[in-house]
Image 1 (cartoon, rainbow, N blue to C red):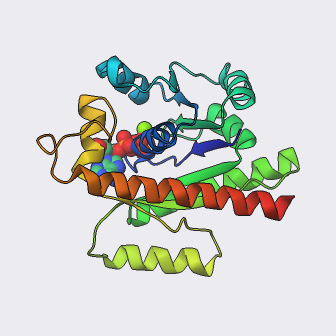
Image 2 (cartoon, rainbow, N blue to C red; image 1 turned 60 degrees about the vertical axis):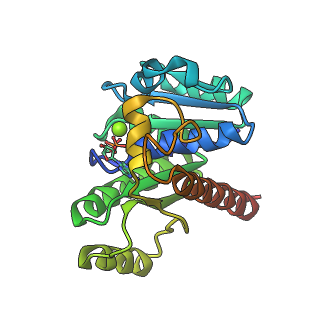
Length: 227
Ligand SMILES: Nc1ncnc2c1ncn2[C@@H]1O[C@H](COP(=O)(O)OP(=O)(O)O)[C@@H](O)[C@H]1O
Ligand SMILES: [Mg+2]
């Protein structure tokens, strides 16, 4: 049912990684998930090809999603699966607008840099325009990615600015972890990683599940408010 869209016109902020990790957690919890790869670079389709045997049977990756096909893919998948997750290209384009128009939740990944925040602000403007065009409220939240224990000055400034602007921030963050890089490189899921692949894969799983729980909670609160 819910369609979760990852958008930030800045590249390298963790859209694809976070989309994949979220999909893996939902799939591990037993839900059918469709992951739409709408980035011409096809990072998620490439992930699926890297180790097809370790793509969970209930996680369907749809490659080559374009502006011509994205609405059909979203509508078909949303009618069938409990979770549809869309990974977008790092530019503002028509596919981004369409996906946002259909989203139950737009997640805006940001690392703690001002550049990411500036591009994130542009995504929020697109969301507001789409909300106006479709005459509906489109829920969104910032997802901090690649965070470390040490918070830089940039990060604190951005967090304060978001709070001041009343922009929702997901209560869990994607911590910077080798496990999240590793799955993109070697394929498979965070649940397949061994101690010999990366140190402490359990911590990555715990982090990923906390993010997934925060996403579900955010969706639930939004649905209640709009009911
Ligand atoms: N939570 C994380 N921990 C460690 N590395 C990460 C994390 N999120 C993203 N990365 C790394 O950052 C780079 C960009 O991530 P990616 O998901 O491709 O961003 P985007 O899709 O926004 O371009 C990749 O090398 C990826 O492995
Ligand atoms: Mg990407």
